[in-house]
Image (cartoon, rainbow, N blue to C red; front, side, top):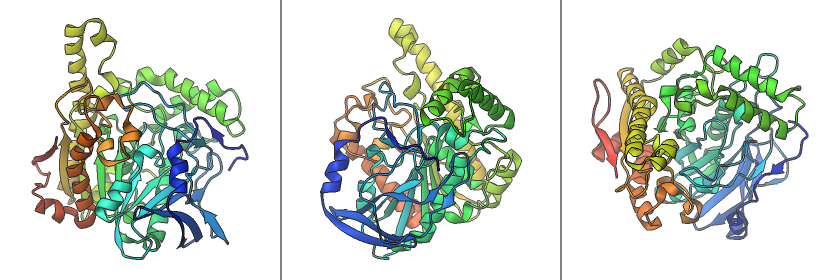
Length: 466
């Protein structure tokens, strides 16, 4: 851990203060020691729970036991990252306190009573460069309450601090190692939190779903979960190779111009952004993250080994995967072409959205599902079509998130929800939440009883959500 103090790039949302003030204190004892959380509205919430520590560019070390009582009533730090962009389809969101001491998680449970409930572990997206499981917009109260499940949201290292592959400086894939360490913490502590360590479902979206796909081919990770949900995994981008990782590292080191082990966080993030711009033209549709998991770098095998590993681990695995109808609209809709030439430009834009969605998301995701099914996994596929289009985004990337997480205040400024009331969004999300919760509780059998058909072999029915 570096000694540099945490920095707050954006003030905390006032709801954090309100949440800390509401309810009553509660003590929860886990394997490492005792935590002080909050009990309110039928839920026990623990925030900022450290699962590991790590020096800069080093592997995570599991958190040791402690004496006394640790405060777990406020969110922990998030990985250092660039400022949030206010112009995206998802709207502005908080960032919060940034620090390299960011390996922490949030636990929401109906009760820490050893009732052996299903456990959901949430891995956020953000192109491996931004985001946090502790963000308010990812609040999991509805899921925990509606499904009587334990939900754990993970913060892990991002960008250059999590995925720089520069021999002699950083080994790469540190963010993946963080995720594995978080899953080990869940296994070791789930029972004390009211969960069942033998019934863990990992849910990821975007780069979080890409992470889940990576972990399916990591031998040490596979025993840590029973089921997975992959929401909009950009599998068409593949895994980074050594040459691409070396090119990014060279640009990062050149832009930084000093020893990255001694540079400030401000310098690290600035150099990260400049290097991203330097290599952006080489990425597919401009979407491939500059910093991402690299094949052949621990804990990830090379591509052939990764494929062999997830095939070997497929029997007994239960999988739900899918995409939204217009994923790429999140990045392209309402862009300069359609604004300047409304009719022709909109047609060109929609064509690019269809092509990018098929090639980066839909086809590779369904292909992965078929391959998993052929290897012995039980697989189900879905697509989110969204409501009648009242904005240019219409069922774009990330449009599934407000159906599952957060509340009206968290998503009030999201352009992709234009024309919908929060009551409509919440109602649309009901079937999706119910499906995920049923899957976490009863697995493939529960979805089959709901009328879902398995996806595999030469194909299968795709469950549609409006």
